[in-house]
Image 1 (cartoon, rainbow, N blue to C red):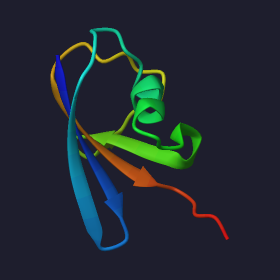
Image 2 (image 1 turned 90 degrees about the vertical axis):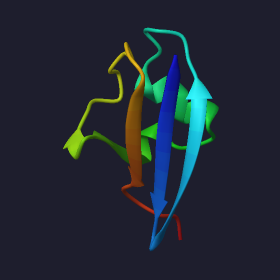
Image 3 (image 1 turned 120 degrees about the vertical axis):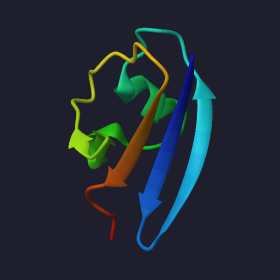
Image 4 (image 1 turned 135 degrees about the vertical axis):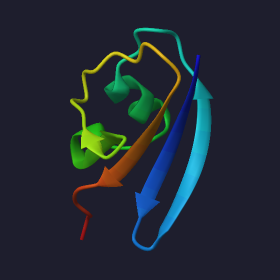
Length: 70
């Protein structure tokens, strides 16, 4: 199943497409992409979803970092 992930940073964004098995948790997908799940907000159609949400259909996720190092 294909999932599109839009990674938003500052004024830019990049888009990735990944194939995942049904039931894969959003948290696991973010880790696979090298992102910090606990430091990210994940949205579907502008609505925030929990990181343990299982992906059960092709979907577009918007990932926004909620903190930065420094």
